[in-house]
Image 1: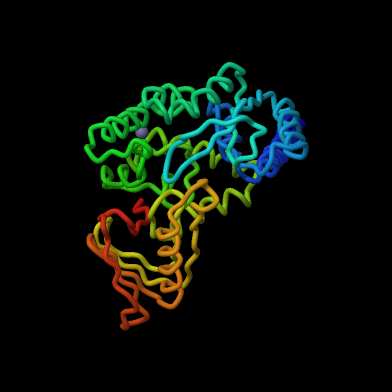
Image 2 (image 1 turned 120 degrees about the vertical axis):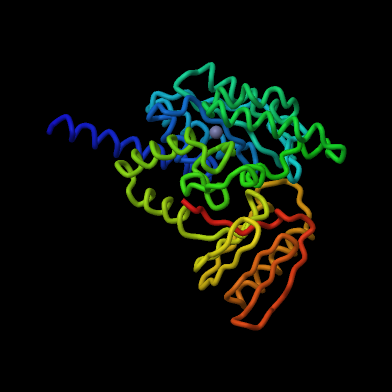
Length: 336
Ligand SMILES: [Zn+2]
């Protein structure tokens, strides 16, 4: 009994510190990933963090995060440069920390100091040299099958004649994963709010499901509210998905498959965030998405086909939108 109480006190303390680190980073350091590192089923995490100015208040926050990491027996490492990221993927410029331009810093967290350092170092190198991607994934502890999938994405992008060198080929890993999947497990819902920091090789990848199940087991113990919220967002909404930062969540009845489907919805929640995620964006793309969201708010049914999608209010069609690409957007919900 005494041992059990000690354990739950430790869980509580860990949870408080993890939440505080995430809060200090403005939510940019994922508390879910941090849990996996603290509880030892993920070796390292790395992230790019946005900030306004590299001033005293920001340095204070980094110091606080560093102290909390120490208390959790973790090493916290920060890059010596900041990075400007273009839309939609990849870094194209490295600048001094005190330069007036806006940028992101890379951070790494691990029980092993050299892994944290390597994570930071590889975070930007992997976008410039695709061979570094696999090593980065190994340091982060991603499953082998998913590292192979990452290699496939890189090779595929190089073989593409229309490959844009500024795009690094990672146009839409979630959709590539979807194309290879008949079964779509709720644990791997990369279309709403994935608890993974990589794209799984399929939406039924057993190694990735195991990881998420471990996370849920700990979360249930240390933060039941967060466990319930995460499960709800992975299981319930139907995602109208363009990219990992631009989607609209619909709640209601879904039927159909990845190609032809329909949803009767009673609630919609926009998650159109690429403006805050990237330093440069196409305003056309974003305006278009916001217009679509307004139409969705007026309707209650959406029909998806490979070449177009339609929004209805009961039987009356509000709009039919042609798609340039079958997979942009997709309408998806886990089927197991
Ligand atoms: Zn896999």
